Length: 356
Length: 152
Image 1 (cartoon, each protein chain N blue to C red):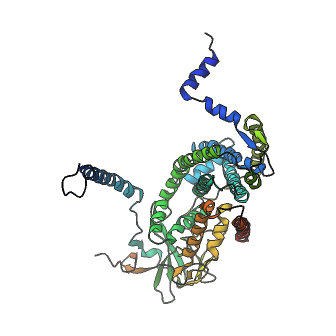
Image 2 (tube, one colour):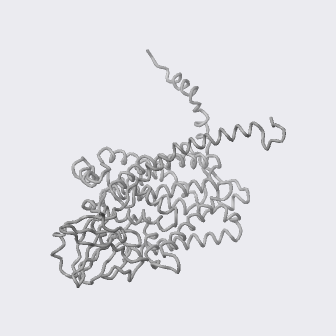
Image 3 (cartoon, rainbow over the protein chains, first blue to last red):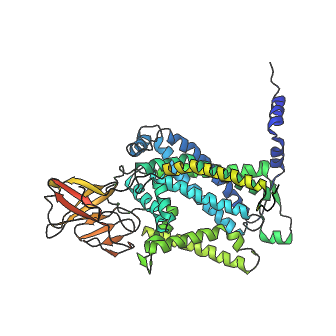
């Protein structure tokens, strides 16, 4: 029997109504201008997310989220399983690349002012994705269960404690008790492989839908003067360019992962003193340094409380940026640019300072 | 429909009853879930150790013991008495270490220092190390939360 593929296609289209999506894809255009390069950061994030999903599932085949088994199972993945060390290395490095591209994506949108009306919700879902990505990194950091990851998790989960009343509940929820124990490890594994993936997919779906709905943003000058910007068809021209960038990134990732594979310390001992040189992942370093410089007590409250409140205020302000910077062509837009540069300098200087 | 002199309509009345009932039902479902997610484990009120393990400590020496899931630190004072601390930094919960050469407790996470009596002296710690009470009862060595008292 000969199968008529056209008929099969029509059968699926009849039931799933895919034609409008394909039609949209062929009609979609990507504007070309001096800031177009930043459009590629979004799809690069998706590449690293896909790599995280594949390598994450591979690691989860052998990883054991228990106090007794965690460190050993990571060791087994790295030594017994064919190319296991590389799978772990790619997972760890791809996380770094992903966060780096999320931050670049955010900064590009910050300085091109693409968050302005009507893209406020796109910006806010993007901020949520940044926070979720960082929580992914934070929960993943504990899973190898060595002494560095234990201390980093103790510090990180204790930070909400600085907030009166609700903070204690948050810390207990994260830890599964008053202390970081085997229960914390199991909980973090669950967050990392089940809850956070559900959350990131839900927010990502809205984020991408909003990007399609509002279209790609164009530079301010063009928007204000209603100038027609030259454009590239999304399919196949833009996609093919993206594929080229993906191949370069994939090659870079593999090279870095091959040469700089992460190490694994001995299994964490909950009774041992914190080791010297406790450091969180690089994208938390500036917050780590911020917490370090605040003194123990500042008047009636602890320095930690002041630091946590300042950090929270900054995050909330960035989240609501589209409502603060409502007239980007005016003076406020320039102030936002200066603040962006200042914030960047602060993050870089504090990160380097924390390594000294 | 509204009965004469009534404050609300029959629909509003019935909706409130139904809504209240649904809300109560939701709470009965959610509260056990919340209780399950926030576990009941607390740190101990006291731990019993063997005195023989600590009797040989010299004045100024510090030894660790498990205080629930936290490290406890036991220091022998110059007069031979014992001082017990919870070896957890008051800043952000890292385990502290005893620096015997400097006679200070040190937290490596954010460089917090405590003197030999557990007082916070430098760095970010806002409070001293938490102290525990000790007592020798026969062959047993008890470490207790202050005010927990001996069990009868």
